[in-house]
Amino acid sequence: QVQLVESGGGLVQAGYSLRLSCAASGLTFSIYVMGWFRQAPGKEREFVAAINRSGGTTYYADSVQGRFTISRDNAKNTVYLEMNSLKPEDTAVYYCAADRAPGYSYSSSPRLYEYWGQGTQVTVSS
Image (cartoon, rainbow, N blue to C red; front, side, top):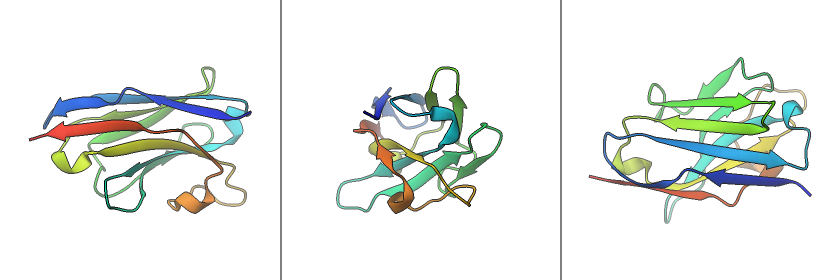
């Protein structure tokens, strides 16, 4: 049984930082492209960042480029999202997801990701 378990969310003031973690089990972690998505109330789930299988290539939404950093540790089956200079508009439930990505480097479409975590709430106050 595949499980993705996010942690590290919370309530912070604008300008502060948080580090999210996503621990995976039940799958061969190193063969999956990993992504982070977020969903704010009343909005669609949106792409935040993705990282390739080796961790050598990363992809970001324009809204977080330069502030967020995605990384992975294949030995620990864990993917991370370091979030700096947080803004109130970053408030959302953050989800990690896994994609086999056959024939492409990564996708920003949530429909292509096979496995999802339960999400962790991030709230940024002004």
